[in-house]
Image (cartoon, rainbow, N blue to C red; front, side, top):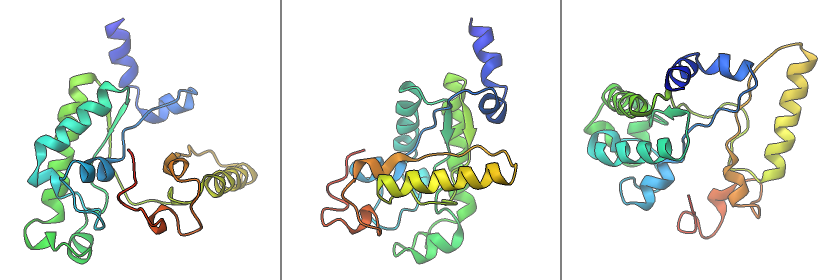
Amino acid sequence: MLTFFHNYVFQGILARLDAGEVVIGDGGFVFALEKRGYVKAGPWTPEATLEHPEAVRQLHREFLRSGSDVMQTFTFYASDDKLENRGNYVAQKFSGQKVNEAACDIAREVADEGDALVAGGAQIVGINCHFDPMTCLETMKLMKAGLEAAKLKAHLMVQPLAYHTPDCNHQGFIDLPEFPFGKRP
């Protein structure tokens, strides 16, 4: 069984999705590390990969133990421009390349502990997950219908953060008066 599982994992994510599998990824690094005191609220930059690598490694391990099939690198907003202009001046200490390399090394290390895949974390494309649940679902339906009409096949990913904040308006959870203090990962 272990051999089968090992071979199964290394089919790759697209082969698994094409076979109809549900692939679980990790995520929520910014909020989890913010609550633990490793990331400053607001900038959303992943300098913790260099400043607190053990905290990032531990969070990856928690996601792995919780059933994640894919370890997502903590590289969201890790470009040089984001590190410079998000109000925390991380670029004065670290380059985007160094942050990204550390994030990739940590994700790969933990993925190997459980035969998980590794995927790069990137800025959001399409509908941002912070809108209310119905906006997210309606947008996903429209995207799916558009793909089908164009006879294109694509795998859509859902990040259901909005379900934690159903009372949001169209600005999303960041405009709730209790943000970021009322968030629960």
